[in-house]
Image (cartoon, rainbow, N blue to C red; front, side, top):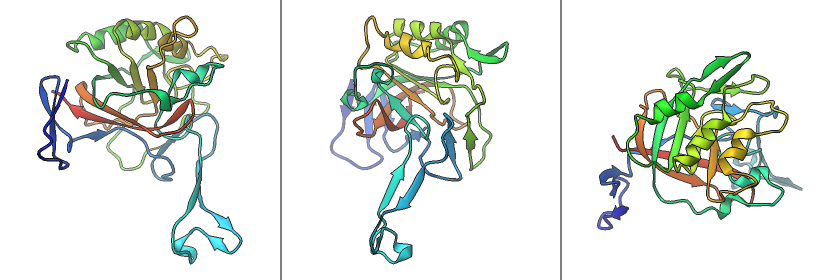
Length: 259
């Protein structure tokens, strides 16, 4: 239940969520923007996104080049460049747009940090680790943010995950999250699944319960960026997803502390 005080609609407006007062002016943005050459994460063997002025005849969409406006074309892939949210249509023959999912304004969310365990050449977040982490969280939660890496406090983050076999999450964790009633899973990696798994995408299938019982309102958000100073615990999550008619779209998750 969210209670709004509409008498004061400033940025420091407060709402009551889960019987706690949340200041909407104190959000923690955990997204990674697209197109910043000094701060980015990318993957899947693609080069950097391009943002270039439109050129049509004598017109150039750049104020620096004499135009009255900046008018840019942007070429990028939502899965490879920056924070993005996926629908179950990411792995189905049937087209299903992430824009069809109706997301609550705020969701009760847990943030947990699990670095995973080394198994041969892989680093895997396992079921026992996840159960132990969530055992510390009280009550029902609708969303879960998994942090696998703690970045040093530095301004610039420049990471290309291609051909690095990043940490991934065991599919048994997905089954556990479904049982816990978690509909929205966010992670700071390019994928919940192994970089090269022969196309099985076992976590994706288990979390969305494809093909047996598709969970059409469930989402997976990848490439989030969680500052090191943000502590594990309970939060309210506002998951903002761009209006793209596609299986995935750039997104901006914002956390509000409940602790």
